[in-house]
Image 1: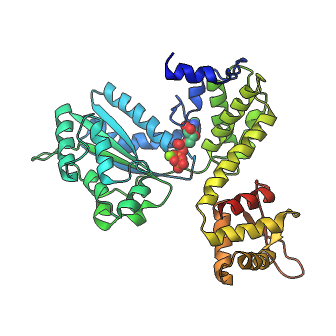
Image 2 (image 1 turned 180 degrees about the vertical axis):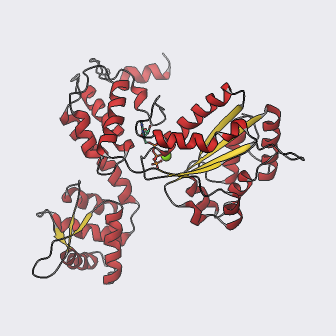
Image 3 (image 1 turned 135 degrees about the vertical axis):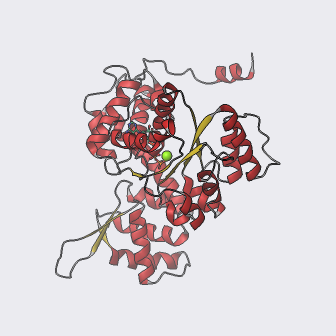
Length: 397
Ligand SMILES: Nc1ncnc2c1ncn2[C@@H]1O[C@H](COP(=O)(O)OP(=O)(O)OP(=O)(O)O)[C@@H](O)[C@H]1O
Ligand SMILES: [Mg+2]
């Protein structure tokens, strides 16, 4: 008996009812579906921008931007796969490499990833960026290939390295000689405006017109995405009617397709865990609660002490009420600062922090309708119970 068999024999047997899943993989973040509902026009736009690579000697670049879960990564992958196929039919060798700059956040690591597409054993040290660029040029010339480099979450790289040299190098990347061939094109992806983070030489080489802006998904768009995944990943009838609508309702607040698919996946797992054979509304609600808590926890962990104290004040004010006011929160915050022997923020700063917490979605702040004392700002917690939030924060402090 090997170690794994031994470990398995110690574990309770996996409950083996009929699973609701037909193809679990179709819910994976890396999965690229055949069609991307509601991203047709953006795909066409990319084809228009990059089309000339196939029949003329050019290189192109584009910038894809939009909020979390709006499909930036999957759109770029799908486009590259389809474009490669189209180019192949036209007799042109197009290759692409997608680099996630959160995982590879130095220029060296990015270059290594790109090179390893062609030379899997390229040594991971001892070469300068220029030497690596040179190697890449040689490979592309040898293979008569045009390479599309996709730098996903590129803001992380720009921020970490504090320079945009690599974009400058990539967008000037040509074959040498009298009639140089254009060998490389670039797609940059970021939620943030990267133009503000680029220095002028890089900006001058980067075509700024080719921006593709994705909006957050509307409810009916999420519904189409969910229906597709249900059909791909689940057995027929394994998902109760209108479960997709409930998930679309929940996720449309953020317009985030990842969140929608995550709820669907988690709900399916809960149905399997309880051996119920069908995903129900209750599974969706439970899935939502579980996912929300992991999302909030990571958001909370990022907050500094003052923001945590303000949130504790908000939770205390909200224990018995649906809404509280900034005035009440500020008073409670003063008390809590004393409890924690922390110097309290001034009024203006306090306000700024409240707005910041609203921006990241932990609290909801909205103006009340005008009453006797003029307008006031009402604060609520969209999902997490106040008691739970306070406990989590106290643990963290
Ligand atoms: N139009 C669509 N059709 C089908 N699936 C989609 C669509 N848009 C997004 N998805 C799916 O939703 C999830 C999130 O999409 P994606 O990873 O592309 O978002 P993103 O914009 O890159 O988000 P982030 O900024 O957080 O990286 C993925 O599983 C993706 O396959
Ligand atoms: Mg992404």
